[in-house]
Length: 190
Image (cartoon, rainbow, N blue to C red; front, side, top):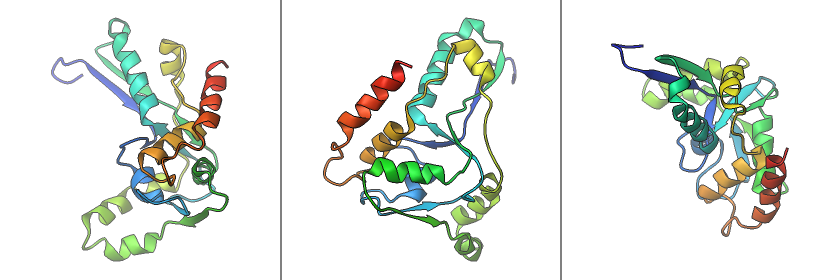
């Protein structure tokens, strides 16, 4: 609580989704190009959390709808999609792209070190690199206790919608929509 102002903090992993500015949207895949390779920034075997922006936004909206149940200062964690093997996010993106072969590469952090003295973005990325070198997951027990659930689009559908918005699926990206809609419907009934 700052100066008597109500505050709501909702923490989440790395964002991805349509029109997002994120590691996924701006680094792992290239906008406007079919997914032929994915550049994963983390250690392949270290866990990492991801938050699909439409789900995160829905969770925040539901919390705001329960304003009368919230204290003046609240903090919640949004679990999102957690991959114990961080590189599985890249595998999920390869799968959602619909392509048979997609190369998964390691981000060349050495290039960031080389350019850091001259490029602010690279210098600041290096300051946050530790988030890719140790497991990062969030416990959403408080959020689920209040809302009853955490909004969560199945990962394949979430990534497919993200890639489609980025024009990375070739043509118009509709080839898998029927299949993915079925996944979303069946997940919603669970």
